[in-house]
Image 1 (cartoon, protein in one colour):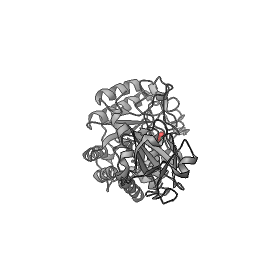
Image 2 (cartoon, rainbow, N blue to C red):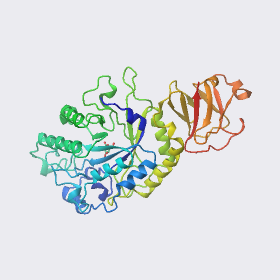
Image 3 (cartoon, protein in one colour):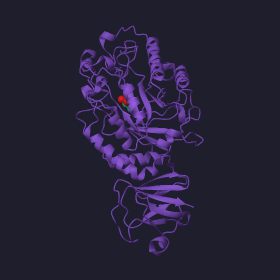
Image 4 (tube, rainbow, N blue to C red):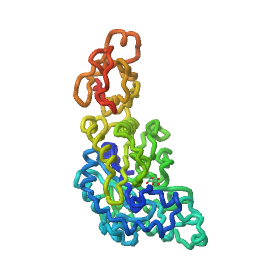
Amino acid sequence: MADTQWFRQARFGLFLHWGLYAAHARGEWYASMERVPPEEYDRAFGAFDAADYDPRAWARMARQAGMKYAVLTAKHHEGFCLFDSAYTDYKATNTPAGRDLVREYLEAFRAEGLRVGLYYSLVDWHHPDYPAYADPFHPLRGSEARRREQCDFERYLAYLHAQVRELCTGYGKLDLLWFDFSYEGHTGEDWHARELVEMVRALQPGILLNSRLEASGGSLGSLLSGRPTPWAGDFATPEQIVPPAPLAGPDGAPVCWEACQTMNNSFGYTEADHAYKSAAVCIRQLADCVSKGGNYLLNVGPNARGALPAPAQEILREIGAWMRCNGESIYGCGAADPVVSAFGCRTTAKGKTVYLHVMQQPVGPLALRGIAPEQIRRASLLYSGSQVEVLQEGWTAANYPGYTFLSLAARANETQPLPDAADTVVKLELR
Ligand code: GLC
């Protein structure tokens, strides 16, 4: 297993789902969901021009949002490659875009000081040697044309390994590789995973691998079993959920993880999906992840022109404003031990400092459990440094032994709106 130190320090990354599906504008599963025949799907190929693609602007937005790394889909399930692979014609350089979009992304994000990752789909709905007929997801599943298909999965695996080699040799240092995904009959050694992992780790020493050479968005793989396989990866990838508690092995040892989440309800650009989460919801999700020792990989699906949707840009800006004041409670932080609990709060911690993320307006003072008043050297609002009073006497403290009360208002018995309605962070420096 690789050293996950930078990854646990970073805590917050940008997921980018971009491919031909952006032109169809119905999400990255559109071909499968609607069983779209290839002739129809590939109309997007001649239309994909990426005219507004400005990876430096993407990278700047990510950095300003407080993100420390990014993961771009070099190839998604549709099989289309954003990079100039020698092994296929189904790639961005052959579309009107005419550019190696992966190379430009890597250069731009590195220049902005972010760590770089690539997503690579194990699943491939374009390659003729990827079985279609009996597959549960392939757009041509059950199709007469593919009934007696003569596909040679070994040939597909050679292609997959060769493309991963290309990405690991032709694009400089990669910090992370994100495989996706495994399912019945296509898991672990079905992908020749041992060989693949050995190759990647030899070519890119120190690279981090996710868990999906044996897992999917809905399964966590053997990382939590205490006996991980050689292809279990370095971190688990719960999708569209924040685990209710820190992930750990049977002995209680923490397992590294990253929750990937959409900003609306789609990874790939979807014209009709306006159900964006508010920046406040994203900020709370981020704090929630960190409070359980995990990372938050927030997705944006650029459109076919290569622009990030305006609502996504606005959300990134708002998150950035919060991160500039409160990043200290996120970077390098993890679960608090012992557990501190309070109404409407999550806690993150680093060394002797506990950060209380107050996400709901308490009425009167905030009651904490898990920290005694005498353990607190100083309590303050992280964004301003203003002192927060720890109540030592009076009816609040006296009547409820076992609790520590913090006054978030000027006077103990008053209620004032939280300075930050999304997440007001109280910094508790412990003795
Ligand atoms: C999935 C999906 C997918 C998305 C993703 C992100 O399992 O198939 O479209 O890329 O994982 O976690």
